[in-house]
Image (cartoon, rainbow, N blue to C red; front, side, top):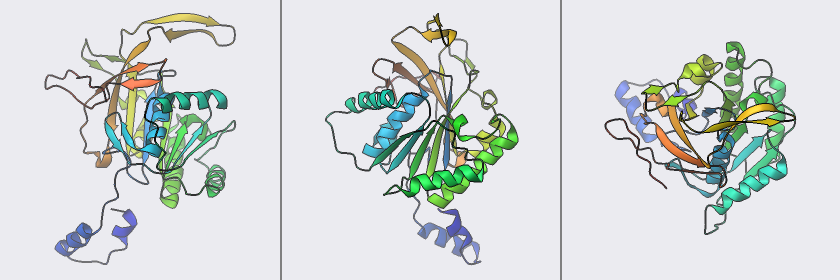
Amino acid sequence: MERKEIFEMDIVEADEWQKKADSIANSPDLIDQLLSPQQLMLEVGKHGIGKTNDLLQLFHKFSYGGRWHGLKVTPCPVLYIGWEGEPKKMSQRLDIINLQYLPKNEPLFPRYFKMLTKKLPLNIPAGRDTFLKMIDKLNPKPLVTILDPFKRTVQGNYSKPEIADAWIEGVSILARGCNMAFITGAHTNKITYRRSEGEDSLGADKVKGAGDLLDGVSSAIMIAEEVGSKREKVTDPIKGEYSVVKWATLSIVIKVLKARDAIADMPLLKVKFNHEELRFSGQEWVVNKDGTIVEVDE
């Protein structure tokens, strides 16, 4: 039910109010149980773990329909705004993802793809005005905008609670005013998962500004590599020394922190991510009674 529809109702008795409420059709979820129109969703994980590829697959699903991690996606016009990666390479990544879904079908709705070099700070009026001018040129208007990464949409230190509050407020204004849901990917280096030791540190306290960001968004997904995946150190003349995953596939655990109305209880999702195919497999939300996760391919 739209919030404005509730507030526009006349004052009535409780049973009469219930009849009116029941007569108003609910908007279908954009992502089943996870994201409704005009809501905000956050995806959090380490750098290089696959957030962008995951969001690109979701970008594809919005245009064509289908399932994302086993959850039904309602097709609609969608906009992707990215900052990381060269436009040509990002286009190639999209081509790889498109080839996964054969036979090729015509998209049900248009998808808009834009790479930026400058920040688009949605926590301040100037940034929101720039965004509105951007989407004013699009027809039909997107019902979902994917922002990757979150830090490029913030003016100031996004780890500070007051900045996170301003971002939530600003994007919520856009979401209501444009009838648009927003999804953004955020980096954190603190997430781990050790299933063998019964440790689950996929907690809200591992996200910068979490007390405000995670309270403000409608749903949040945290993804982490399972401890034990093989990583090796490499040296780059520009980046210096850093670690990379050397296995072709990486075990990843995904956890939903909140879902629609904060009542959906989803288990951990165990997936495999293949870097060469940019593909996640084992995408059903399935868990045994003893807590072990069942991997089921789409």
